[in-house]
Length: 131
Image 1 (cartoon, rainbow, N blue to C red):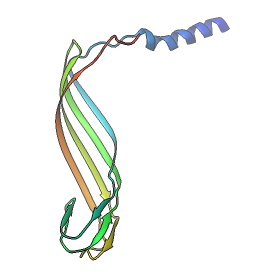
Image 2: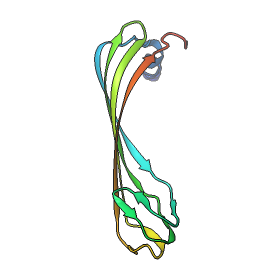
Image 3: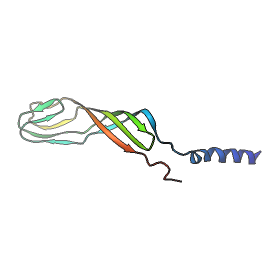
Image 4: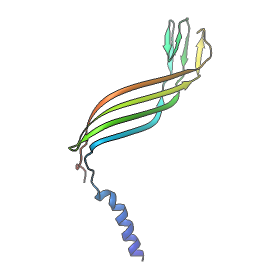
């Protein structure tokens, strides 16, 4: 009985190694989600725009970084020979209420930034290179 269990366990563990990757053929959709981490930005004399807020008075200080949401969505076509073409849209959003410094005209408040983007990608999958 123990030998049968050991053979079954070895077979189940070997299945991923026995399967080989197949080239993508046809239409596919990809999605991803994660975190968007912004870094601290220094604010100096003059005007500066951060998100939708413009600081036009003199002063020094900083806008602290924050952690927000990031997401991507892609639509592509696999040609069956390892070559793929896709279009990708992405979104990043951060909310931060951490501003510090002297004489901004706005001493406290919050900033919400949203960024959108798009890309066109050409990819090649190297199938069959690993044992």
